[in-house]
Length: 314
Image (tube, rainbow, N blue to C red):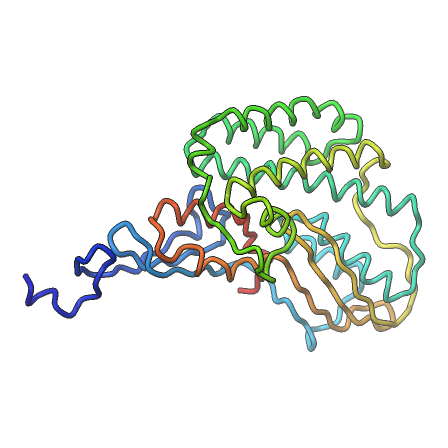
């Protein structure tokens, strides 16, 4: 036996055995479709891991075939199925800035209300994934039901859903097994410059999966308050820009963090663009997050990042 195993890697427990490279995804319970994890396993421990996207779009287009501004907006929104409103707004704002269109307060308010509605729906979708991954069937059912009710709701309906949304947060806080499973899992360094959105805001509250859960619950409440004080949610649509040329750059705080878009407009057509998303930075955290962890903990840690594979270049 000594002769057979003498050249194999040595495990943390002193044993020598084969290390296996195992894929998880692109369809795996508790993780978004299109995300592929590749772990090197030493028994039930993860010695190395990485995440890749199989469905993302190119983040730069310097030589792509120019398209009419409205077509570009539809293309970007449809390419991001987990946050179409956010990226529609991002494209509208960048194009309008390039065209030097002045902001209309009423339009801005309606757009922001739609953005906050999408934030609530997105965080509920993440909660449903958490429930699926951890085996909390009630959480999966409740969060996904609320997500469907929120997604296209008007302001009055969103206000009516507030008690149910707050009750969900209360129940999560009273679920001791949930805290035991998430506390201390997936701790990220507070000094990391790659963190954006809920990830960055939770870093100062412990930086683990439990902190990220409560950060997203807090954002659901904050979004509800913003909607109550704003106008009716309205899907962003492009203002009349005419046959103009120019350059524009803007940032939108999507449910997963800040996304930035810069583009060049020529005679009402998008000539080139550059897109920077939160998930394109967060996906690089997987390698350090899973190294040396048990397999179950590693999968929970990755799930807590709320990665959207559509927002990462393949």
